[in-house]
Image 1 (cartoon, rainbow, N blue to C red):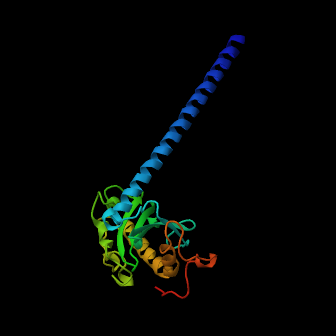
Image 2: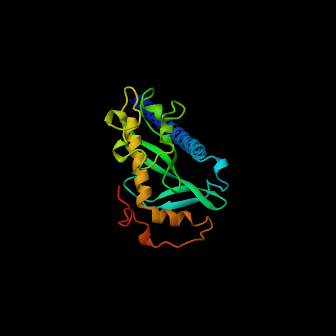
Image 3: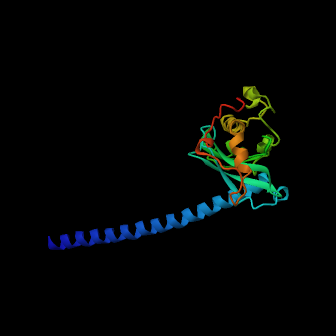
Length: 233
């Protein structure tokens, strides 16, 4: 009996030590992996920013020149959003803001949408998604050129009802075997443009502030989406 008890005790101690070592290894691996994933995501984001607005189109440090814009359900983001500003000799030539398509086939699709001061799309890039490989992943530039169809578009080009895939009466191509994914992206880009239009006063005031903070001051009330004085869409 004593021998069996000692054997069980040794086994329990061995399992305990194994569990501690395994748990520690997993924790360290997760920490290292998390940092690596964050670094890769940051690199991908920076690459996408300069694809939307190339360095030849501005002469400021766009990665450091950012503004905070009002929160909105249209962007499907949590809280106010941080947008990157491109300037040429101090004058804003465009901005890039994050947006989310919450209704992708396999979940949320994270986007970056570039818009010039007049409300025209400079470019769109997908920075994160879980869409089906070989079908929905054609929203990536490395899989197809579909995303370039947004370049030069605006709320009036195409007409509001045509901001959809062709299957639903719109002008944008759908993918063979995958309609939900492109439709979700199209709607997210359109909502980004509507957001831009409805918040023009705030956005212009923010863009006219230099990175050092110079420029017109904004009151807390200015940081509110849905200004009633702006054109409705």
